[in-house]
Picture (tube, helix red, strand yellow):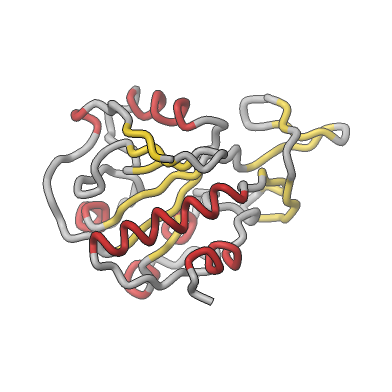
Length: 199
C-alpha cells in the first residue's frame, strides 16, 4: 500500500538531477506521521522521498525526482551527493535503553517489541525492523531502480566509509556519517537481499 503525503513544497528542492544511489535511514521514532511532522518544523529541508511504516505502508513524502538534505554531509561536494541520492526512511525506534529488564526509547517510552543486542556506536540494544518493512523496502528499491536506471549493488555493512558513495548504489546513513546510527545492527541485510533477489 502506498500513501501520498501533502508535504510542503518549501521543505524540498524541486529541481531535477540524475539519481545514482539510494540511501536507507531509520526514523528514531514510532510512526511515519511523527517523522513528517518533525521535518515540517525544520528549516534545513532534511526529509526523504519515502517513509516505510511498520506495517509496510509506503508514504511518498515528495516526488523522488526532487531532493532534500537527507544526509547532512559537510563535504565540499555535499550538494551534488544529495541531489543524486534518493532517501528511504524506515520507521524504527533505533537505539534503546535497558532498565530492570525492560526497554525504553530515547524519549523514555517503553518498548515491548523484539530487540537485537549488539554493542555499536555507544549503544547496546536496538529495535528490530519488521518483516513487512523488508518486503516493502525491497519492492520500493526495485521500483526506484527501474525508474531511474540504477544498477543495484547493496552495501551489506554499517561501516563508515565515504568511498561507498562511488562503489555501491544501496547504502545506509551510517556509511557516510560516523555520528549516525541508522541503519542499526538490528537490520538484516541478508533478508533484504533475499527480497531483492540479489542472492
